[in-house]
Structure formats: structure tokens, C-alpha cells
Image (cartoon, rainbow, N blue to C red; front, side):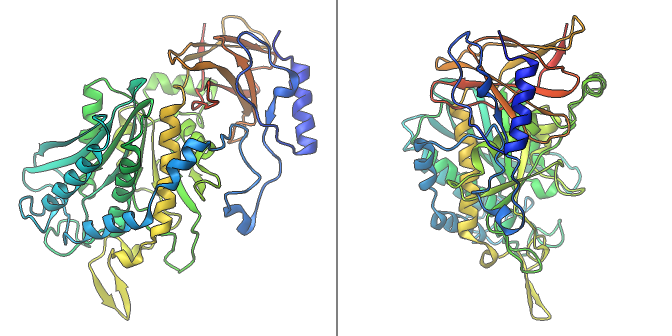
Length: 489
């Protein structure tokens, strides 16, 4: 018999009084009912002030996953010096404007493209054939900010998964740059923060992961055409869509180079993660269903954002992940949007507060102030910590089981209990599942109940009053992102 309403409500009341957190272990034995004390609750102690920015805060979600030995070893390999070298090399091409020269060996976007290709191929050479690198090109006909037909090229490295190669995670940064005038293809446009910093994160991840064997596939992409209108990312997302690829997560790193704001204040242990709620790809039928059950805060992207906090907001990364419940910054956009528009879960990493004197600016000095996106305004240890956040997320996603498919709440009969069903995954190391829940007003999952290797569970709580989710667990204790169930008869 599963947990009763009385048991769960008592556990909730006790947690509210004590403020304690009980970590949920791996799934219960197959078919076993969870004990009452297996309910995991989030601490009611909330950090405020400067301590809130430290990665040792006490406000961990109940779904928090501490990093294991394998992940910690990977994170230690991320090198700020290599990140700096990548940013400075990209800056050395003068401009990387999408409309700049494609055949000059020293200046312009073509020179940057060729260097990125060679660099990624040098990493792939150490992968034992698991990583492949390719140029993904197409000709963009005249369009907004593209006055003449222009070849746009993404540089893409694919590290094939050893167990679930069809399950794909994508990480990107854009290697094009711009000056004050978005159509100026000749002036210097160093683009150190925007977005050599993001490309440096992608390359460093590719370097440290190339010699490893992820269970699922990871794609590392340096895309072009972002400043002109997200063209390269749209082509990449379109290719995945046309191929029927199972892209389970996409992250873009754009403007992740500095924790210093325009007023000089610093927040060196925070990175923002922008994650939309209502899906950009939502159909009218899906919108009507969402309105009938709630779920505005439970899109696949929001579950992905919670997962990032679970696995990457800790002492191993040295970072606090500040999730922002927006698709992007106010009325602005980035390379995750074409993925969102095609129905993929996608989010954007960005530094905590931007300094607009060092992005989208001609290089110049005015009234004694230096303008321009120059490398001297980047913080290499900070970018390395952002890379660790990405690495912790991507590696755990690849090694953990897939999020449950076809998760449903049965609604055939009116009852004050909740019956959940889902389809069992195919991973050979899958050991079971956990039911998570929270109050409808809570942004984080607050309770975790292991239910074993089953595909159906009845919880003696009303679906009217709380939100439920399901996540998978493997033999190593790694947990998938949560799946938010849909109603089913």
C-alpha cells in the first residue's frame, strides 16, 4: 500500500515545524511501498543577504543531487587559462561579423570558423572515434540584416553516447560578433564577452569530455549569425527537427564573461539561467489543456531549469544558479529561442548583470571611459565556473536515465486520491522511480517519495491541491529531470 494522506500530511507538518531536510536515497526495492519517513522535504531556512550567493546555502530543493566522484574529477579539469586563450584567439581575428570576410586567413568570420574547426578536431582526435566534427553550412538568402545571399556556417562537434546515442543534449555559443552598427562588417568587433566567452565554454566542455564515454550524446556547437537574427541556431534547430532527433535539452551560453555590472558591483558566484514557462511552441489545444490543469510553471524547460539547480548549484561548481522565469532578458533574445519554437526544452546562461559599455559597442574612449567588448573586461575564473555549471548539467543529463515518457494522471474517475502512470525506460541500469510533489504556490519540488521499479502509483492526496511529477533513478543513484504528467482517461 502506498503512503496515505494522513502519513504525507503529517510529514509535511513536521517538516514545517522542524525545518529539517531528509535526503532521499536511491529508489526503493522493486514493487516496495515507500516508508513514511522516506518523504524528503526542502528546508524552510532561506538564506538572505551576501550568504545567499554562496554555494553552501541551506535552501536546497528536495530534488538536489550532490556531485559524485566522477563529476568532481571532470570539473577539476576545466582550465581558466585555456578559456582565456580561446577568447583571446577569437578576438585576434579583428571582427567576426557574419557579413565579414569568409576567405581571409587572418581576419573575419572565415578565419574564426577555420580555427574553431581545427581546434575541435584536435579534441576529437583523442576521443577514440566517439567525437566527430563537421561544418554545417547553408546560404541565407537576403533577409533582415542580411542584405545579400550569405553563407552561414556552424561548427559542430558530436560526442556519441555509448548507451543511448539517440538521446541528445546540445550546448552552444555564437562566434559571430558586432560593433555599434549591426551592419558594420569592417570595423573591429572583438566580441570577447559577446560571445567569445560562450564559445570558450563550449570548447572547454568539448575538450574535457572528448576522452570520456557519456551514456547519451552531447553536441557542442559554435554557431554564426546570432547578431543578425539567430540564423545559425535556427538552421541547427531546423536540422535536428528535420532529422527527427530526440533533443532532450539545449543550453546556449551568451554573455557569460564577467560578473561585474555597469556600476562596478560584482557577483562572482552567480549565473542567470533564463527559462520560459508557457512553451513558445504551444498549440491552442495544448494551451486549453494547460489552463485546465495548471502547469504554467511546469514546462519541460522549467523542469530542465530545476534540474540545473539540482546538479550544478553546489560547492563543486562554486556557483549559485539564479533561475529567471522568462524566455530571455526583457524583450531580448538568444540562440535557444529557435529550439523553443520547435518544441525543444532550451534555456540561456548569462552573467548576473551586464555592462553595456562592453557589448555592441565600437572600440573607443569617451570622457576617459573605455568602450568596446575587449578581453580585459572578462573574468577567466568566472567563465570557468560557468563552464563547470554547464559541465555538471550536461554530464549528469547524459549519465542519468531519461526523464519518464508518457507520464499521466488518471482522470477517468473522480477521487481524492491521485493515480499516476508512466512508461518504463529502457536503460539497462534503471532501478526505479520517484514521485515528487509541491504546493501549487511553490516554485520548487518539496517532497520526494521513492516508489520502486513500477509504472503506476496511487498517492492518497488530491491532484486538485498539489502538483506532482515523476523522475527516474539509475543504479548509480543519478536522477533524471522531472516529467510533469498530463491528464489521461
